[in-house]
Image 1 (cartoon, one colour):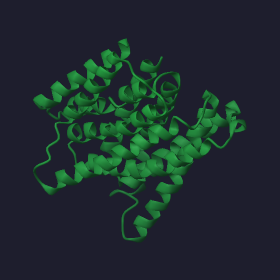
Image 2 (image 1 turned 90 degrees about the vertical axis):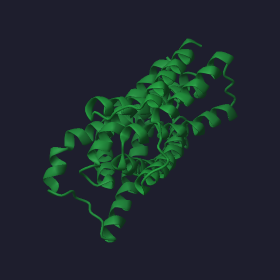
Image 3 (image 1 turned 30 degrees about the vertical axis):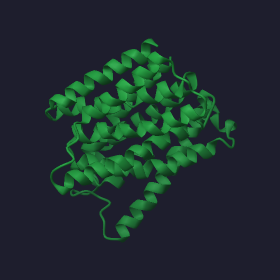
Image 4 (image 1 turned 120 degrees about the vertical axis):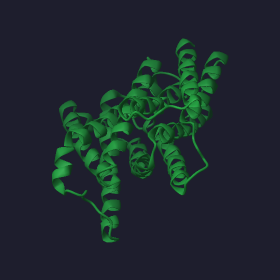
Amino acid sequence: MTAAFALATALLWGLADFGGGLLTRRIPALTVVVVSQTLAVLVLGTLVLATGAWTEAGPQLWYAVGAGVVGPAAMLAFYKALALGPMGVVSPLDSLGVVVPVTVGLLLGDRPGLLQLAGVVVAIVGVTLAGGPELRGAPVQRQAVLLTLFAAFGFGSVMALIAESSTTVTGLFLALLVQRVTNVLVGGGALYASVRRGGRALPEGGPAVIRAALPALAFVGLADVAANGTYAIAAQQGPVVVAAVLASLYPVVTALAAFLYLKERLRTVQAAGAALALGGTVLLAAA
């Protein structure tokens, strides 16, 4: 069950990142964050009301608040990096954030077996190589790498926090709602500050562009929420180390989507890294 939910997380996060990266090429990144998360809040609010999840409020929701504060900063940095592109290079670097939840899992007592440990090492090396990062070149490329590394450790922190925010499925609905409301408040404040400094809230073409993009924005927001949920379940069902590493395969999904949809060419090292990442997945799933 841990492997299944963690791999579902990788698929959902990978597709959400791909969609978010495309949207930020025509809509300001902060606007993408605020609108997509607001749409997610509406759906989660309905779920919380329908399931009575509000009755499970408790101190653990502070973990969700923490995730909600860190998340928008990481998401904004990542979307800006994706806008600088290419996705096939930026997205795999983001997987380095797995160091955070893996470290937390080890500190909390996770002790992976030899086969699992081999899978962890192979998967992390594979996902990193799948990026084929080019650290030399134009300043834009270096900026994209720095933004991605910041986002990586932010996302890793979100993974560690959301895994501690609930112990039941209905409680998870409430935790995710609290996280997303915090996302909107933090992201909205940042958007307001950006506009005050002369930044743009609307894309060229005005509100009509955002209205036309609402289905895509909703998909990004809901896929990201669902990924957080499946990861929390995976981390509760089995070792956090295994859940975190398998979930961290999402950049491979983003890179493959960019290859199929945007025709971004994969370098030899990227293809080899993807193969290693899948090999590590097999080892972890078989352990």
